Image (cartoon, rainbow, N blue to C red):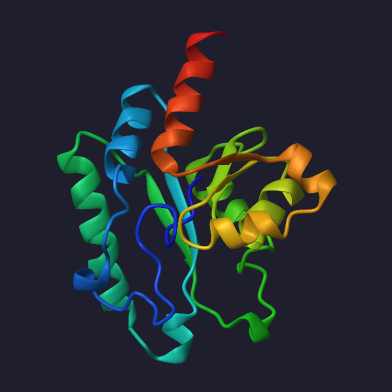
Length: 180
């Protein structure tokens, strides 16, 4: 399970509103392809409050996700699904991370269990959602990850793997899998 903005693509305080603004982080597309080649299913779960703010519409978001999936497929990888929360934080919905609605939706729609799976993100919301859903939280320093890392307390820091980027996480996952 991957967060999108700040993990796969460059994040922006102005929100990602079009395919032109969606720029992959160096190595992220190939990392997803390598995971796919090693039989890891890839799902994206992302908060997209830009929809509720009116910065983009569902069609714009679909074009952004099409670009992302197309680039991954060109590299030989595959994203099984992208789930997103379109709400503002103030809506107090069940799908906005750190709540686990997107994770429950993933399990329901894909017929899988996420227990013990990795959830790779760059924010405290991602880490909290992973822990609440009995997943393995992984923090990347890209996007907001470096700021998030600074705010980890000692207990949280000891239960979370931290890497520079998605490519580094992928190297670790694949090396760990090889050594089993």
